[in-house]
Image 1 (cartoon, rainbow, N blue to C red):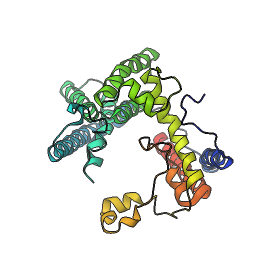
Image 2: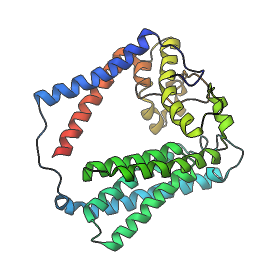
Image 3: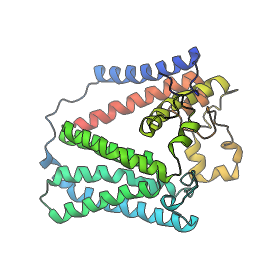
Length: 312
């Protein structure tokens, strides 16, 4: 199943970490579910959400305005928009201003808010529905202008999951149509980033150099996450005991500029260009397999609490 030459055999510790991650998550989730339980309530009724219709509407408007404003600030400060740059494969990687880019990419949440509004409104307010539709389109344009395939897929994926959670059903024909519609957009964004098929298959060291790009990219996003984790397990000389996982604190407070040593830790990956990593990368970097187990348990507890809140 290894389609890339970058794939390597994993030592026992890597396998144990992945097993520990799943085991820790589900052990805590099932323990809390058994001993605390989740309330059994009737399925959602949209009229119960009527009071939130206006709040969701203004939230979508505000989030879109903030995202568009931050995108324009970045474009003005950096002097370019990634979609319109040619011959620079890493234009998107350089398109960010510290602190501001977090708000630019928050546009991925807007389609989900649009879905919530639609499920509550059900077309009763035509003007509001039209505005919400425009906001949803604008929020999808930003990832396209940034040529960010991940953000586009995340925005659409979150919206679909939200719709399923709200409406409890999704027609198979709609799902197939959505996937088929996403493939050409994904391929176009790949070419817009200056990444042709031969370039990417070369970077990914695919065994089949003619592999279609819509198979190559998802495969490498997934497979390389785990292979990069394995690289760290094999090459990490010592643990950082919390400093790595506290990166958001060092970044958002500006301490990383005052004390560079706080973030001066190498990233262990199979190849310099392939820096995608798993959710548990930093927890192992800090505390080894103990960190992976603890982080998984915390996620299991958080998931249980979210499920309980949703049922209420």
